[in-house]
Length: 105
Image (tube, rainbow, N blue to C red; front, side, top):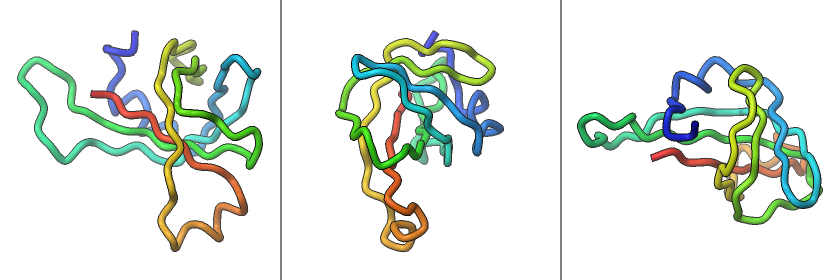
């Protein structure tokens, strides 16, 4: 399923809640962004894209694969999530929330 996901599957879901499932339990996260790669992709391949989520300050999530429940697509198994540092101007607005990214090539 992951190889069939595209930017279009996420661009209209910004602001919606997704559920991350891992060994430590479930965490609700809000999709705050989706962006296309500025680099061209190989012919017959989807264009690379990334999605950004915010979560509560705890628990802190490690770099690893998680299952994520998409509001419309259902369960997405084995999505690699990594924490990212927000831009300086966004840190105060986040109120301690954490930012995570998943990249699809």
